[in-house]
Amino acid sequence: MPPQNLDAIFAALADPTRRAILTRLASGEAGVNELTEPFEMSQPAISKHLKVLERAGLVERAIDKQRRPARLKAKPMAAAVNWLEEFKEFWSSSFDQLDDLLTTLKQAELKEPGNE
Image (cartoon, rainbow, N blue to C red; front, side, top):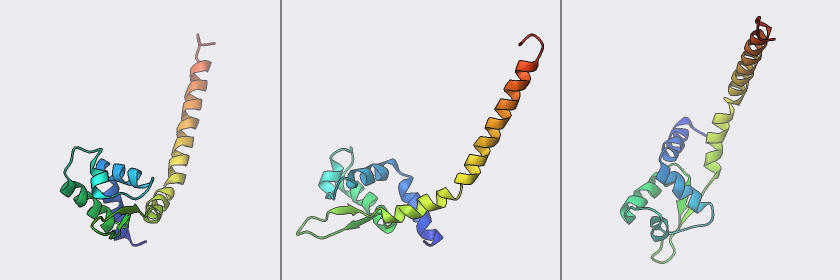
């Protein structure tokens, strides 16, 4: 996936309202009216959030008479997950190093006079 689309995905996911919309859409498609219900926000504000999610490729909208239901497209999120996975080894080795250091410090503390 091109880096600019990855940028759009992370930008879209950065907003808690958009994450909540994605969570709601994970249980099925919904129109703007349905998506507006849990938020203290206007329909135009929710529509703007949906447009950001659409540009990032995370949501698609169909035309069903006068209703335009939004549907989750989770596949693009895989690009973000894959990018984050690249850092898993770094995080794991950092935690392993920290664990080794803590073990060494604890052993040194136990060897000090008066701690036996």
